[in-house]
Image (cartoon, rainbow, N blue to C red; front, side, top):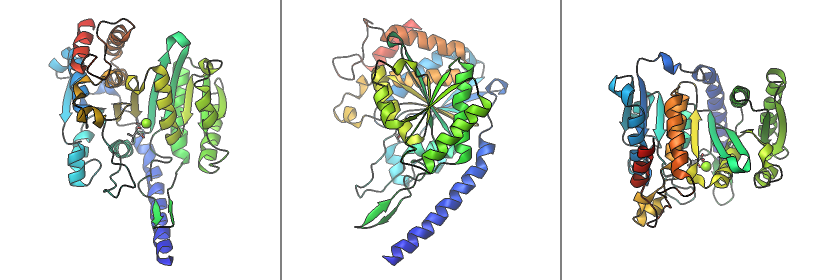
Length: 384
Ligand code: IPM
Ligand code: MG
């Protein structure tokens, strides 16, 4: 037992030093890129696993059409990046194999299909989630997830902290076999300040007045306590025009399904795990996780992905072609907007609205009774 405690303590010391070093690099990595000043914008496309290659192929077709002139002029390149597959990751025993990471780092922004994460506690090699590794390696600190239901007056934007909290050391916990396990949650001052400012800047630029800080600071005193306090301080000193409210995550989960108050919420800023959970709930309210897009934004890099997983069951059942490309297309729209191509983003958004409206002539159900991803995208391209 003593030996375990000694090892765990030594490991904790290593982790603390690593985390302190991470905050020291944060400022450098947070500096934004001026996309308009680039000679050539490189958009990397990673298929991922399961239905990933199927939906990414369709999203690529759409991007090729929307950016046809810029691609022809050499101002934009769509670059396919191979190797972010579960087989390759397992074989190399790396969540993101080194050569894949290098290729990704040569791009400016990334469109990424879903990647399968082997779950813990099964005895299999505990590979970290590729998403989590990419978010960390590229320092993509803001996970931005919009959810809208115009008919219900819902227009929410979630700013989920994306590089720390429960995730940053989620694969680095300690264990005393047969006795206990301990995971670590990390909240840094700089990491909190930058997500708070990202959320508030968004609110300010988009005429939003209500921002909810969502934590469980009554229980997670240190980490969530710090998060809530720093978010509030920055709002009070730098964004006095915003109406800031503190909420606990449990009641917020209830609020989102409470028609009496949910329309008043506009922007949410929250730590990583709560953001993970509640954005799935919000996406479901919008019509399902298949309908939401997700932007992972840092300074130097940004990655856009579907909110849903790789749907291995659809592949096993042979119905992968019927996967819904809506979420990856939403991610493509967010990518275009992020790099300043608002006109192309609007074209895509408008066509998506037409093609997913009630009574649309092509409907994807995720099964054989619906359209395939390709049929839906053909319809979308016709509509663009
Ligand atoms: C998400 C996903 C990921 C997460 C998984 C795939 C690691 O659920 O993007 O919300 O937990 O962040
Ligand atoms: Mg999630």
